[in-house]
Image 1: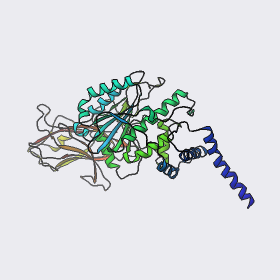
Image 2: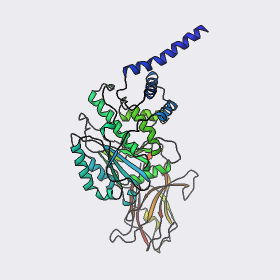
Image 3: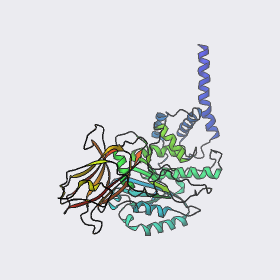
Length: 465
């Protein structure tokens, strides 16, 4: 019994001593918003992480800590430009930006966001920009430029610009030195983590999902539809983050209901490590250790160098920037509920020559479906309707869907997801898939509203891996 008691005392001492050591060595100059009780809880959580770094199931401890924290009670991010939407949107696209010694790409990034999305896609998202640099001259220049260049989007409540006064930030003195870096580097990344946290805190009530991108990216055309399609397919699955890029914080999608938890996590551990490392630990805390990554990437960095220490900025190797080449169009059969005009050949819609398929009339709900002989990994789909000479006989209101089959149906699929809507009678989209993505068996062109005249389907082209 005495032996057991001594063992217990030794273990208890080993667990408690690091906590008091941590408190003594870290007097919490950097957590001025916390009460003494909250500081002790933070110290306990950090000490546990240091004692057993391989242990990741601290979820209950963190949730209890989160309930009691009041870190954000005094934070007052202010709107500089625009106003939040009247109704909740599908997506908020968040950008945090500071001035760059080598020049800013923020205006180019905003242009890319709006130019890479159609007018119908723009109805489903807002862009939230956090100007996080305290320099009043830079703030004034950015406010003037954004107000002038993006006035239509500001007027329609699609673009909101905010700033968080410096007094709301936790102090950046006596930061812990990690990864053999300089104090300036530590201060920069600690503040950057808080920049992101305040941005996310403002974004919690305006949409169902939040997409984080950096301020120096260009966007793939139709990225909103691509993301909406994935979200629909993953709606009932368990996930904390969906990744649409492999670079930093760019292309990270969250449910907005999860943002308060992430914001608290970033503010608690902002001085421990950079935000991308913190995000990895956040995933482990909530039992998503393996990133859910979709390919190809939808976002790419502009420029080749980081704005800090002129470090080389890596490109995303998975992004599809180049011409995909000629379509593959593997062996397939075609089925339709459209009325085939006399002399028109259905297979012409899928052939790679200059022939076409024509139907004199169509009704809403009718379809033309390509069923592959062998399911394949399709990475791009192109659908062209209407005469290429006079732009007549286009299908103005239609959509393209990808079909998957689990029951070996002969002329159809039992599960379809939306790829995208036709714009001016055409669609040209990359197909996102994660590493375990299923192979496509069907590609369906669906008529969503009865057209006033006949339809010409010139090409349904597929690119496969």
